[in-house]
Length: 158
Image 1: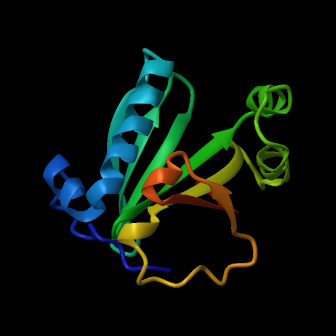
Image 2: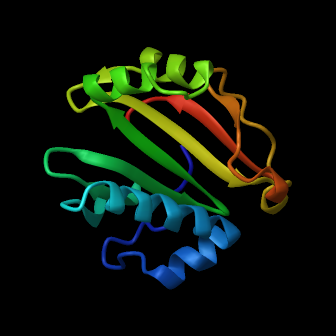
């Protein structure tokens, strides 16, 4: 497991900290955060501190469950989703790519839902790091190929 970038419980990450750590990937972080808040007007954003080992995690909480989790890393971040059964059914009936729907359906089931993590990084900012050796992880086309962005996915608790 990677060392957390924000291990100090007394210092909740601020916007300037995220900008420094995420670089150009912060724009995508901000877009996801805004989308989740727009999708559920009752949603609220919140930083939580789990432990020194995992550091700070950002979550957008809806009325009954967390809509997404965001975990910052150097020039990249991880997004965790928990898909309830209605969300899984909606994904199956959507125009999402088949491999994404299959990834959701195969995700481990937890009380909060099916847990799917998506790892976002900008390739130009992260060329120095090798591809992950994790066999559960697979690359998915990024939202902005002109910027060299890439998404990697794996299953696991959000």
